[in-house]
Length: 188
Ligand code: DGI
Ligand code: FE
Ligand code: FE
Ligand code: FE
Image 1 (tube, rainbow, N blue to C red):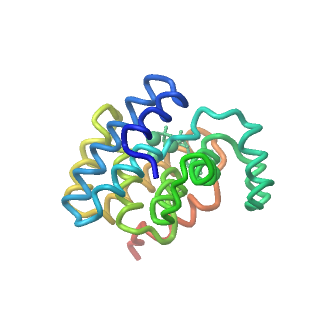
Image 2 (spheres, rainbow, N blue to C red):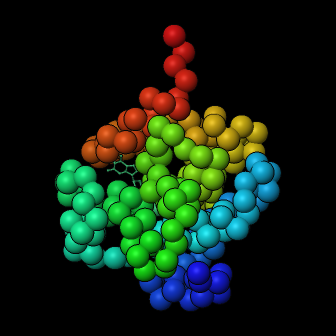
């Protein structure tokens, strides 16, 4: 298995500098949350570092991986935003030799969330959203909620991301809706 330094070297090769800085901030944010929520700090570090490993790969790499690993063919109708997590996890397994399914699931679900998420997956989902360089309306509230109640924070992000996608005429990936229905408490 690769050391953290070896992992950083691979990531620096794959990512442009701004993305490399982002994954290091996500790692640090995830480590802090792991300590707070009693999650394995090393897993949080690795998952934070690798979550966007595939972000800069050409579309053809994802299409090839969808075939090779026999992933859901509907994925072919989507794009990098969706692929870099769920398909990226397979590239991480093959190329970085990370086999821990909890880490891989945290990567798979970091963009869309999932009906079921371990505490580690919730941490990576939130760390990506609130890392120190993130700046958007609602980020202060997201940071506060993440400290106070992780599952309410997951609901908050999911609701705001869905609203943002709808307002911008973007297609909604089915898993994003699944996450919304599972995590956003209905007020009836
Ligand atoms: O990779 P990052 O930029 O750090 O962040 P991310 O992986 O959380 O999000 C990547 C993009 O994915 C972001 O611009 C929002 C977009 N996204 C999330 N859910 C959906 C989506 N895009 C579409 N079209 N549909 C979705 O359901
Ligand atoms: Fe991402
Ligand atoms: Fe995110
Ligand atoms: Fe990210």
